[in-house]
Length: 250
Image (cartoon, rainbow, N blue to C red):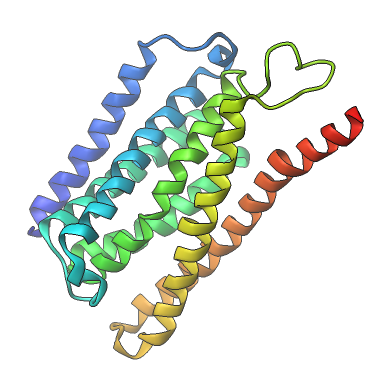
């Protein structure tokens, strides 16, 4: 894909996710989530992006297995399109957050999007490191369960009916989602980011220009810190709090 085609895909993707967000507005919203209707739409749109790009990333490596051997110069229309489509989503979500949520509440996500867009823009414009960008999108497999968990919380389906006040107990759906979220977090976030960091260290002499290495190292370092904080919050909310409630019952 040439630069013009890539920019058209990015723009088309941003508009498509905006259209999807608008369509979701016209669909029924669960009663408990109506007070946070914008957040419901935002997370549902994010779920669509994660489902699409997570599966697409796996497909890229399935159809182009040699890309794993050369994450620097190997590329294809499929991988280029994936990174461009994902860039379009992050642009849409960045604007959506700025327009609808205070900076105090959204700065972490805005910072994350800024880092990702900076790295992705280098990949799609230079046609280098597209394989590396596709590896990073494997994280979206975990994001699917992370977003489903958030939607369950918004829709009031965290606890079993009748246990909310006296002794809150997670519903079967929420419990399964929680464990799948934590499991895929370890595999597709912790392991993937760790592997990417080691790959950067092992191939640092091949990465040119040098500011690519600087951006990649800084980006991975910052994202690792953010993911560590996120993992702590998930463990505290879904494991430690449940253990506390169980011990209190006895």
